[in-house]
Length: 393
Image (spheres, rainbow, N blue to C red):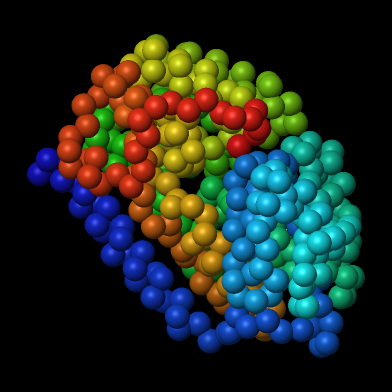
C-alpha cells in the first residue's frame, strides 16, 4: 500500500466516523428554540485566560449559531465590529448593541487574565464569588484551558461551556470524552484529532526525527498534545526531539523568541517539525519560524490549522471554518438553557476533514507532492502570505 493511498484511506475513515457523530446529534431530546428564564432574560458571562485568535473565532461562530437559532437577531458581525477580531470588542457589542429578547450579555461579565497569573487569581476569585450567588449569572462561556480549569470544579454549579481547549481531557478540564465528570460542565472534544494529524504527516514525509517545541508544564504538555506525540512515535518508530519554550506568559515577545530559538535549534537536528499551539506561535513570530524551517529544508505541520499554512507552514488538517463548531456549541448552549444538564449532552464532535497545503513551501523544502495528495487537499496555497496585522493568534 503506497503512502498516498494510506493518506486517502485515513481521510475516508475520518469522514465515515464524523458522519456517525453528526447523525447522533439529531436524537437529542432537548430543543434549541429560544425560551425565557421564568419571564426574564438569561444572564451570560465570559471568561478567558488571555487574548488568542481562536478564542475570538469560537466566540463569533457561537454567536452566529445563536443568531441562526433565533436567540439573537441576525447582524453582520464583521461590519458591526469593523473586522476587529477581539473578544472584548465583540462582548461590548453584545452588551450594548445586540438585539435579543432572550439573552443578556453582562456588561460586567467579561473576564480576561491577559495571561497574567495574578490577574487570573483575582478573576477566578471574583467570578466564583458571583457564580455562588443564585441568579447572578445563568451560564458562563469558559474559553481555553485556563478558564476551563478555573471553572470546571465543585466551587459552583452554574452551567459552564468550555471552548477552544487543545485537549480538555489531558488538561484536566473534564474527566473523559464521554463524561465531563460534573453536572454543570460541558467541553467539546475530539480525542483523536492530533493522532490523525501526526499519522498523516508521517505518511507523507516519513520523517525519522520529529522536532517539537512546547512549554514543559501541565498546560504546555496539554496544548502540544505531547502524550499523543509520544504514543504515535512509539507505535510508528520515529524519534522525538524536544525543545522547551515559554507560553502562558503576559510578555508575548519573550514567548515568541523562545519558539524562534527552539526552531533554530531543532532545524539542526530533525527532518520535520510539528508546530504546536502556544503563545509564542503567532502572527509576529510566524514569518521567522517559516524562514528558519524553509531555509533548512524542514517540512512543517501546523497543529492549529490552515491559517498557519497560508503563512508558510507546509501542511495541516484544519477546520473548514469555525461554523460547524459554532453550530454545535450554540446548540449546546440552547439545550442547556432549555433544561438539559451540560454533563448529559454529547461532548464528542469532530471537525470535518480538510487538508491544507502550501505549494510554495513544498517547492522551497524540495518536497514533491503526488497528484493524489493534491487531489485530497481542500485548501491549496500557492504563495506564502505575510501577516496583515501583528496579532497574537
